[in-house]
Image 1: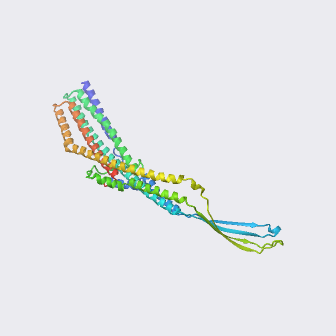
Image 2: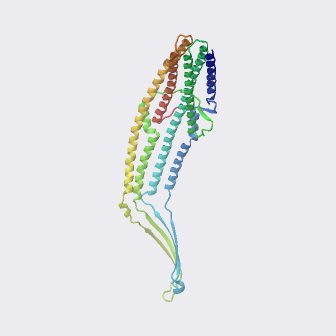
Image 3: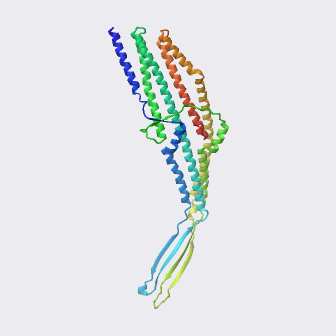
Length: 428
């Protein structure tokens, strides 16, 4: 009798702790439900990294204005005094204006290179967004996955808690052994501990959504409003590869890099052309009153050109560097084409495999596992089945439920990676 009273007391304490533990699972924090489209719009408008990348376009466009600059003219002013006070040989002043005439199409070559750099910058920013959008979408689906995993664990925890509560009563009535009652309670507590980790994983996934949108993790957390819907696609891999090789943003950037390398060579050749300096000027000489060499006052005009001696053209480092840059850009482009084709093919294989895995679960596997679990629980409560069979059925059902949602996430992630690789986007 004393033992029975002690067990009932301990069981009551455990039940109270379990209730408090469930109450302490922090699921009441403020959340903002967003659909995938709403979330991606927020990522586009508020992601700090993307905003920083967009300044590269402005910087490149400013480079075009810089390339249009003409050489600045030079104004020269000077005066002279031929000891006029002592020798009476006059004084005067000269003024001149000179500039450099760029020959060989230097300015045009600079502008062409700056425009190619701007095109490349635009493509690189577009490629940054391509990856940002895919990464943000993966984070959205991961948060959805973590939510479902938490619900599966919570459901399993509730089932085992109900079973453990019932076993406490059955043990008090002498229907089952103490070991069976303790075992079911232990299993319920173990699932409770696992649920704490699932909760932490879910909240961490929600925090990641805030980071992508530039929101502070201290703000209300974004929560996916949707599910793993409309993931099935029917793609033609040959068409995907063809479109990716023509339109994918990093391929466009590589083409622009090749063009920029060509323009760099044009500029390097233009820089080897001789520039001519031109100048015009005028001078004033005051009257010289010297008795030996008297001279009336007069005005003088000058004009001239200056031609540099391009001994530096003996060194062709800039020219060689530009030629090697062309070869380098071509090699990068060729390698990228190979990588794009491989990425599309590999992503398609992963997507197809993920779809088959989800279909396998949806053919009745989950329903069968739950039916077996319900049958084992019913038989156990009637004393027709041992507790071990219930626990095994519970673990199997729990594992299959979790694997199903992991497969759904892999299915969604495979679609995201396939569209990232192909340079297309139709997820909504």
